[in-house]
Structures are given as C-alpha cells and as structure tokens.
Image 1 (cartoon, rainbow, N blue to C red):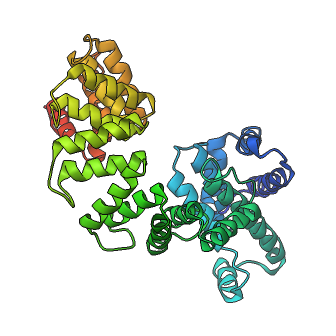
Image 2 (image 1 turned 90 degrees about the horizontal axis):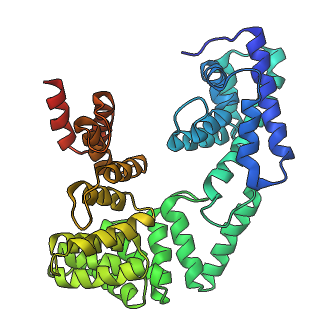
Image 3 (image 1 turned 45 degrees about the vertical axis):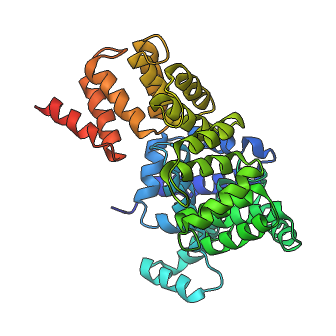
Length: 398
C-alpha cells in the first residue's frame, strides 16, 4: 500500500532519481552501462531492498520511480529477476508522460491532489523518470539482440534502415523487419506485418525467411494455420540449407503435419539439422536414437547427440544427459554427474530438469536427501505443468 514517506526518505528518493538521471547522461561507455548504474544503486546510503520498498510504497511511484523500479526488476536488485515486469514498468514510465495529451496529465495532477508549489517539481521529476525510461527501454530492447544499439535515436535509425532496405527488395532486411514485428523489437508487435515481411523475404529466396513463413503457417501467426503450406515452406528452407528449416521439416514428418507421418524421413532431416549445428536438431536426433525412431536404437549415439545439444546450451539436452548418467544408458552410470546435469538443466528453466532435480533431492541421487529442496523443485516443475511432480509431492505429504 502506498503512503507518504518521511521528509528524509522523500529527500533521499528525489536525490536518488536525479543522481540516476545524471549518471545515465554521463555514461560514455555503453558496454558498462548496466554495471555503472548497478554500482550507483549499491553505493547509495541505503540497502537495495529498502530503496526498492521506498520507491514502491511512494504514493507517486507510477509517475516518478517506475523506470528505476523496472531496472531493479530487470537485474534482480533487491528482488527476484522479472524481465516481464521491468518491460511493463519501462513502458509505463514512457506512457505516463504523453506531451501530446495534456488532458490526461491534468487528470493525473487532480487525482494526486498536488499542491501548486509542488507542481513544477513534480513535472521535472516526472520528465526525468520518463527520460530514464526511454534509455532503459532502448537498452532492454536492443542489447545483444539486434546490433548492440547504443541509444534510442540510433535504434530508430536502424529500424528505418531496415524498412528502406526491405522496400528495395533486400530479403535479409525483410526477414529482419519481420523478426522485429514478430517479437515487438523497437516496434509494436504485429504478427500480420511479421508475416508480410517474412513472405517477401521467403519469396525472394532467403532460407531463414522461408523457415519463418513456415512457422507462421504452422502456428497461425498473422495467418490461419495451414500445415500444408507450412510443409511447403519448410521444404524450401531445408533444401536451401537452413538448419532450422531442416529441423522443422523433420517435425512435420515426425508429427504427420502437412505430410504423412514418417519417422525415417524425420530422422533424415533431424540428422541434417543436427550436423549443421542446430541444438534442437541435435536433441531430436538423440531422441530418435534413444527410442529407435526411424533408425535402430543406439543409446551411445543418443548420449553423444544429447551431449552436443547440451554443450550448445539446450536445457532439455542437459536434462537428457542427466537421465543418461542416472540410468547408465549410453554411458557409465554416475549419479554425481547426473545430479550436476540436472542442476544445470533446472537452472536453465527446463521443466523436466526441475522435476528430476527434485527427485535427486528426494531420493538422494548424487546428493544427500533434502526433502525441503525436493519440495521446492517439485513445486517449480508442477508450476511448469509437470504433473508427475504432484505425485511425488503427495508421497512426501503422506
């Protein structure tokens, strides 16, 4: 519940907001952008949890501190990491200062019952919050995703550049623009526009565009689901050498979507995808060897492909390696290694990894029995939809 802070806390928060703003303006090396701001927070005269609570509980937090609260959530400062929440707050800080709609801003002032003498200060601080939000939103969208964007204006210029190149018929730019629209990167998420630009890219022969237009048809993104057309585009993409097109063509054969189910052909395309470095293709190829789907069962080869997938960061691959070590399939049984791989998988967010880690703690597989930790991981797995975890939880309760 919001409340009025003490005078000292009020002064601290306003100075903290101004200091944060000045620090952003003075940062020249954007490679250290986030670290610099994090250090500023940690060097403040209050601990991070207290600062966060003061901002959240402030009656005007929506208008004055939403941008910085978002930064706390993005980086887990004084709270758990929650990037969805941080994005929501960055957008809020931008939307709360709409200079084109004075009526809305006036309504906010009336609602807050601000004193006349405080109106100018409030506007200044609100503008600071909005500017901070623009910087943080820009960095949130573009860091390590597009071209290591340095600021909002450069990002906007890049989007315009993609658009101009796309209109000139550049299939790569058309694909990139479609990707931006699909995921809402620098533009409003729009599946129909994503489909439009993927379609142009695909028609111009770009294998990634062909794969992604296939995905649109497969999942109904911006267009009605059509497995036949998805299969056609995945085939074109796969034949043009796209590892993900090869993966998705294998998926069509595996599940019988757009084509008659055929495990042998699924295996063939998974194999091509895997050998071209696709971690999911490697995972699926391991699955084929594991269960003899489209190929003779071979636990050793299954382990080898799961390991390749895991080494590329695939969380399910890590889980499956854990299962191999636990069960001694394709490799010598080793409970300690099984436990280590389940930890890696679970920490990467894999639902089955969380479940299997819970079982390790529950039954003492590669570690000491720890019912408290078992319950924690079973509950996380259950929240991800693994119903088997509920069975184990009931065993503990009984």
